[in-house]
Image (cartoon, rainbow, N blue to C red; front, side, top):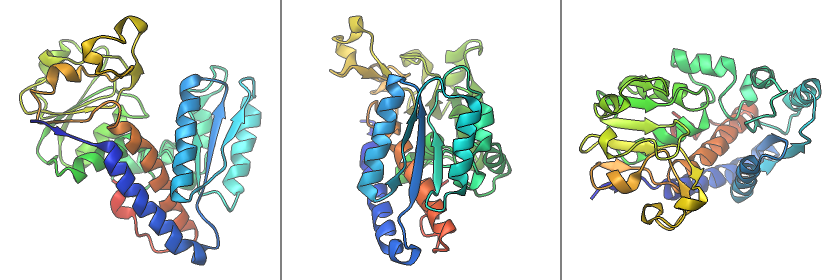
Length: 303
């Protein structure tokens, strides 16, 4: 039987550690950690994600400064808001919820976040630190994947890893983190020719392509470890199919085709998703400890 990589259970364990860390450090710090999550417009998925993050903050004791702006906010207005948050002493982490409306320059706004308050690890300086192998805030989703692999004692060193997807949010930092753990890494994408022949070479396959059911049984080798980063709502005509496992959500991988073939896999939902939110909290608590001069006790939770 394959090993199911339970991200929900691990996230709960890490959240307990974070809660205890905050409780023990708040008296000395004179305040709890603070996280500002900025949402622009009314994208339904963004609304769901921000709600998850607010509830997670409440569970562990992080003070949430969630801000929701109208879709027509200007670039200058939003940049000024970010600059003000950079100066706020009670805020340790800032996250700009993506995607943004098309008139806003995503790169410019991410670059305006203080890199020391970059809770999502997407500031160019922090991406540069990742490339150099130096400490700094890490992109939350790939950091969650690394934590999931490490906690389940899945060996990375010397393994052939294939990452499907090359976004700055997941694919590129994921490849760098795996490389830092001494895997031999190949990055594939939508223009890759004969994708199945490449992915079948993987001991570890991370799929972050953003395409429902892209990967099936002919894409994976026996005893491969498969991490499914994607999460999608099934179209109405597929909601009642047997393979949907009675859920309206699916990933980038047809797990119903490969679950008996692989050594381990992350389910959707309940795999990478909960870990993404938890690593956001871990980044924020780590920054809080640094800002308040507390011992950095949770560094082992971060890749």
